[in-house]
Length: 231
Length: 231
DNA sequence: AATTATAATTGTGCATGTATAATTTATCAA
DNA sequence: TTGATAAATTATACATGCACAATTATAATT
Image (tube, rainbow over all chains, first blue to last red; front, side):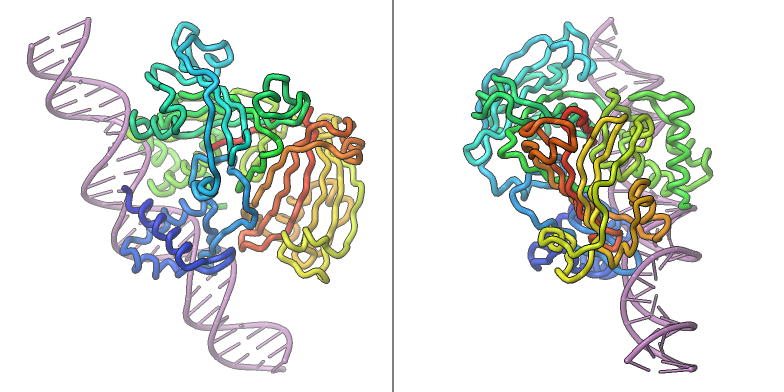
């Protein structure tokens, strides 16, 4: 593990252990350098990382402060980075509706930069949070990148599998959000009424090398949908 | 202006001028260093900045590539950083419903970390995009930070005023998103029906020193609401 | 032609050092 | 006590240099 990531983790642990709250001050740079026995550039990288994660904010001439948001029960919209803690409190599960290798839809091929005769894995599932239906999700995975999926993997965590088993590195993603009304089918899966509000999100996930590997279409249950975002 | 910001701007200009598309390669680090006559650390900072803005992505051992998203007509949810271009295409205007100095609501005081006997500016307005109602917005500004507002400022851009005229620096923000149904009043302002879907966003804006100065509650017209987000 | 091994390319990690801008604290004058 | 001024504190900007990891290109081998 990289030194600056290690140090960032330790600083987060420091914040936890000391029960620091919004606005509380951390030791100054020099102290942190000494404490973790790293150079200024490394500490700076660690702190920049934490700042992007929303864990701290830095004020020139003043110090380094803890950043906390007050509200509980919100799910991070950008869950790719550092919001494990938010999710730990919840009981997450999922029910697989469909799982198969097939040709991509035109839409999927377009978003995944694939030819129509290439193969994708198609996964359709309902995800539950504390036993309540949270969202209906349809995903297309480029099969030349993700060559194999089964029920167990999909049940567990596809992304963990991609990272740990396949050794791929997930990079950036593009999210497109819409507000709309539930179709009858969506309503059935989400245990709501047709015409009820929904948040509909299409996401294209890319590897660090820029290749798109996952195109997802998710409809969220508006009753369970409280999202959090840091700017 | 800082050197690395300057260079970042010039790199963006370079991308524009050369009409570079998603995946196109930029000159290698060494070339960029030479071209802009800055050190590696400066170029690196510029590139990291552009990467966070979603303009490029870097691949170790391979190169620096342009990042573009295909879809037009989406509004950035995190509009604070570098999405001017997305908005330039639109005709934005606003109609002021209410503008006054008053005591904060309990909710506003809580989110702005204020006492109940302190003062806030309250602004209620409908914002239009290409003539269509985009959202209904209620904002509370801590008056000890933003001591004066008038119709002209509110009509124009409050944030530009805060930055340019007051010399304040806007830092981070916390966004809380909900999906819900429009109330009768909201529907009237947005020219929709009561019960129609809405995206409801509460945002707390902070200065770079961590002080919250603006608490906003915004209900979006679902017909106009296409949002974009980069992860 | 395909596979494997090797080398070159290219971005990232990390250390050190100097200068500077923003903020806070201390000092001094009124 | 207040208010201005100077000094100290603290994070940030920028440069340089070395080592290394990931990728890509080249050469060697089968």
